[in-house]
Amino acid sequence: MGEFSLRRTALAVLAVVLAAGVAYGVSAAVKALRPKPNRRREVLEDCRNVDKQPGPVYTFGHDNVTYYCWRIEIEKGRMPPSGTAVVHLDAHDDIFGQSVDSPLSLPKPRNERERLAYEVAGGTDIGNWLLRASNEGIVGEIYWVVPRWERADFRGLHHTRKLLRRIERGKETEGPRLKRLTLEQLSQTPVPKNAALHVDLDWFSCLLRTDMTSHVASAEEIAADAEALGTVLEKIGLKPVNITIANSPAYVPRDQWQMIQDELLASLRRHGIIEGRG
Image (cartoon, rainbow, N blue to C red; front, side):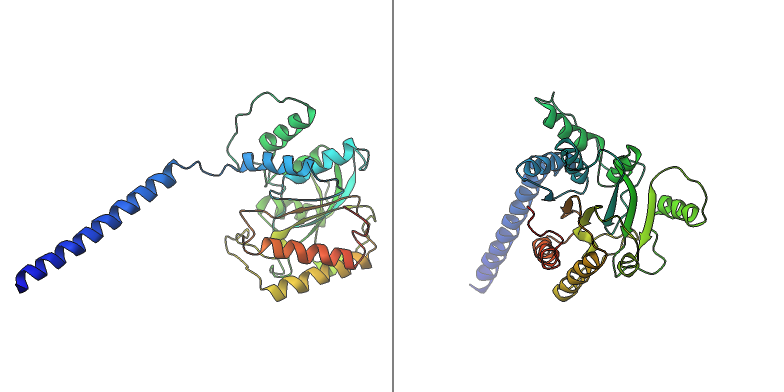
């Protein structure tokens, strides 16, 4: 009787193990069949969502949609077609010369706005959109404000370090007119009052820094950084021609981005940066 009971128990355990294995296999197969996220298609969706916003304050996912917003603002006559300075708050410089996203096949656009969205999704990505805007003359001086938690000698990737060395030595150089600043340095820098303001929320909390580490900020850090930013922008008298805010799905913790955006917008309103704006 005891032997029969043990055998029955062993068979029951085996059945459970087999069932779990089958369930895991089915789950893995379903995941494999599920289409993988395509950043370029997500950019198209971001562009469609931007079309529903009146501006000149825009919120969206991927960073390169900023280029789309600027082109729209130029089309509406609310942003000069060339030479606009930009205050760029980001954990990354976004002037990388190579594409970081895979190509995307797109149908024929139905109108000019869709053609522009296709151009942004297919011709720019999160690593090079600011370089394109600079090369096309849409932006002039770029004031890149690095995160508070970055090390003192942080200069981005190798291409940015090389560019900054030449600029800092007063050597003539082709490419973006870039200034690398801390927030404290920005508070002492004469920035054009109507510069565009771009904020990537990874400036507050970042899953993937350029050295492949992360800095996931606490709620207290985020609130303090948002308040410090609003204070500095008010001090330098910035009245941005437009404001673009990217929540960067691949870089900002998904359980934080909404809270960060809310803190940022609240600070910008408190300090009169987006007073009476969309």
